[in-house]
Length: 214
Image: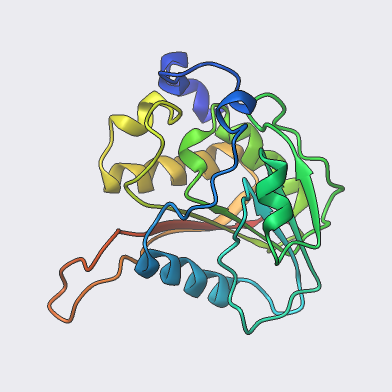
């Protein structure tokens, strides 16, 4: 059973239901999390992405937060704004596609070794369909790193995201991967930058990691 069906359709509505292409028409050459959270994302990619591998940056923009010292065989970016993608120095190829309109990815089976979705999972209106197709695109055992914080474009984030706290977001994203049915070894991580006393030093950073089934 598709577990996303357990959530009402209203859970995936947005305050702003105008076409996403319209909202993202103007490029935004800004970062959406602070330096500490960005470093945490880079650390996750350093940990999970194989050097020399084929990397898919899903819902990409002008920066991919990949570790600068690591070389990859390929870095493909899929996003909504061509100008942002063309500015991204790490991309070796790019695709412009609205995943809310077309959740099927334009890539062949097992064509990438790892994938990242950075601070964007909250904007997907059919996340299970996207993640299920992503599982097809990755090699067996290939990781997806889905990272997020507590910041977003509120009018474009789905309704259910607004009803949950940080722990709820972690559970929700785990639920998406489980519902997709082709992911294993799913783990939830808190990589928020903290002081020696354990207090947050800036934006929090959470991630859910899964591996594509063979």
